[in-house]
Length: 358
Image (cartoon, rainbow, N blue to C red; front, side, top):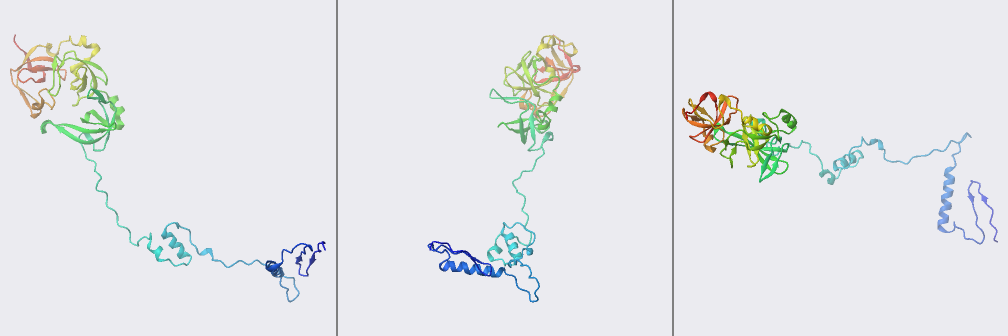
């Protein structure tokens, strides 16, 4: 009839809404019947039970579904591994399967300890108080192939030791692998621990310091390993400590090689003119002829004036042998004399020398 029906309320409190005469009822069919049945069941379940003695009805209670109690779980561990998963399954009352029982499980007995790797090289004690693997700094500069390669302060690692000469006069060298990609055999006195470079530099060198320009006070010297000789007045530069304690390493300009000499054999370049005119100990001068007044015995290290032969043991200087004074000796009371018999240079006390006649 085109007029909406009025709402009708049931005695149970359920409202049913009727639709217009011309529209289709959305609750028709099987789905509509199920929805209406469910609505009735909810309305009936919401009604409280009537007490027998006429008392007020009790309030409705909410009941909780029966689920697994979570209180049975112990403190949670790491369940990402198969072992942790098995522990979790045991707490939940689920037996472990053969798959998880066989994977990543730890044995009851402790695992055997592994032996230390045999490829580790033990530190070896070397001369000069060093060990293999020690970090060191260079106290000297060196030239290789005409180019300055090793400089003061370059750091490296001690890898081995070497020696030259016979047992009585051995000179120790340490093989150092420098961080810049080259290695060098250096005496222990030409390196220092990497952390003590500043203190080594502050201690200084005998009479001079690094970079000092000097000139030779010896008339003529030429060690056996040298490519050329050094003459009186030749200029050079102090580059560090010498190969032996108390000596200086000097690189002369013309030969570009290192000389390990006593500091008394050089003077500062600025004072050369005055120093060279001074007389030597005993009132002698460079070029004076002298002879030994008694027999003298001395020892030389390898690399000295007469090469390998000088490293074979003590050398004797017979009484009466003659030579020429070439400069001051390594101490204040000595002279450096070039003897004629074997081309050797001796630093000999002036008291053991007498002037030759004529």
